[in-house]
Length: 267
Image (cartoon, rainbow, N blue to C red; front, side, top):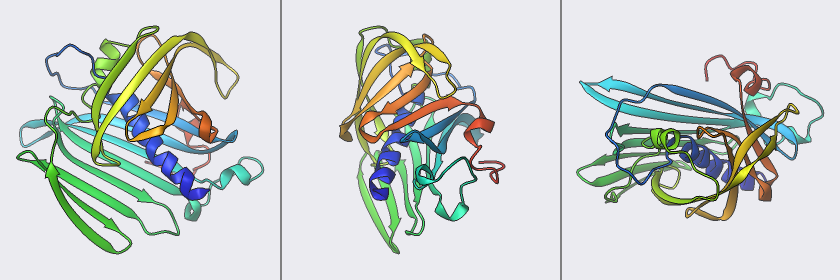
């Protein structure tokens, strides 16, 4: 059960990355520096809060060039749903997934880092860098290091590139949109299909409701999973559900997201 949930979480973190930062429009737009953005989300499984997701995208200057750094962190304890009441999550039972991509302002992938910490199992680390059209990957797992090189697909953008596109060109009722992006988790091209339904009253964990657009999302890298996203009219995601895993993720404040992880100061 735990291995299954770890897999789903790694897929979900990639999903949050794509939803938050890679909705491409059909129209080519001039590149502009991205403003820094941050998002906190709470993870629920089986009705219990078991963790959080933290997303940050910012533009930094490196040797006179602007680089978009996109960071995603997910921390959770899959045993939390079996505990009674709210309590701090012990540090030795926490699983942690971290994904970072570095891209040009135009969305070309420069490098990525993907790490899974799942105690008591060994940490898995995958790092890649693109140069001269080649993607060079180094993977560390179970005490072994493997290196591979492959062609990087022409025209495929990184997961931070079209954050602007989602905000400038939000999905409309009954619209279907298909995009391709680079998935750091699998180091593969991911074709994502969005099927918008209609706006509906959407319930949150605190009992409040928002009128949000219900969108079905599927990925070529995870064809058997269907994600249900709920967007406002400006293109911001407020809620994600994965019915097959009894998982719900809500956008919230930092303090609320970290209520089970009180020892964390600066994630």
